[in-house]
Image (cartoon, rainbow over all chains, first blue to last red; front, side):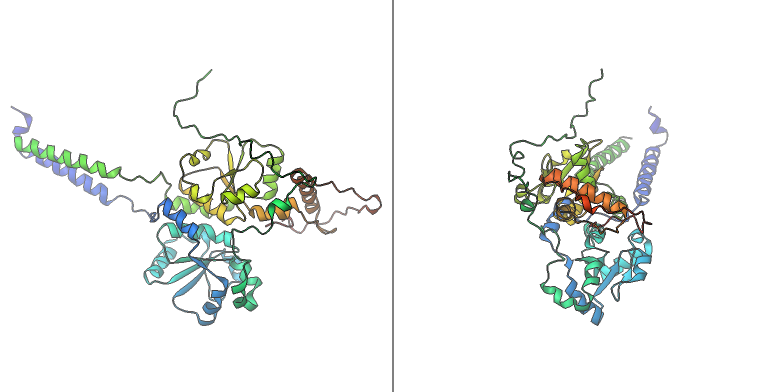
Length: 212
Length: 203
């Protein structure tokens, strides 16, 4: 006679308790604040396409008409923001980005289909937060090219910057090879082509390196 | 009682099948988005062109420069000792092996610093530590190391020291002639109160 036959319900009870515990576990699993919506490959592709930027001359319309469809967020800290900012911009310091209130507002704006333009002191400062939000599914966030510095320098005549290319990043501003050419006339980096660079790579095997 | 065992067996089979779906994610290992954001808002990842120049000149073995510009631009000019991994090839087989070597500082270099910073964010998402971005990129390299501008005579002495270092670095990287000091035009070094410790000509 098997022990289970003493109470035929015993197995069923055990199974139900097991299932209930599993269910509670799944339900109370911490819900992460963010989830990656773009894979690594998609992120790289988006960067190479070079979309999702906001151009300085587009600010003319935003400043003059204050459209409901565009919100400017200044990610510099509050003190610097107080010293001067683009008219109509709101302050959203980088270190308060994850505050529940701010996050709620960003999500509300996304659901309303409002375009969010991030800017920092320069393009570099806002680049990280911008990339981050693009990767976690905020497809309405754009990055102001040139940042506040460029805006400030061209404040008086923003519209004419449509023909300017100084705010574009990623381009060489000099002819490097010519500028850095050795002054004695020999070819620069002449020995670089045939001498492979020695690089230490991470070893893949998990075997511990032999002792002494 | 057989019915109970059958029920149990079925439950176990269902759970076993369920585990198959848990491991179907073939994305590489990544850090939590929140952790990534915390890393992103720290400005500690930037190194200056002067620091990079110093490390190259001193032959620092822990320095690994990764040039993220397209291959043709890299072929035209690159910093001595740098390795080319264009952004589109970042995830290619074997390239991740450059990252995460203990004790190696990886410095990303591009024309300015945006593309390098983007690469930094992407590798950070993959959980790579010990990576840096050369602030200002090669454009800044040209302005500060290859053709440094001389500070005003009344600039703080740190600026003059920095300029002296840059002139030396210029000679190292281009083989430019050392300027001969003019004997009758010695400037009196006056120690002034330094207004700020920000060096001139930063990018």
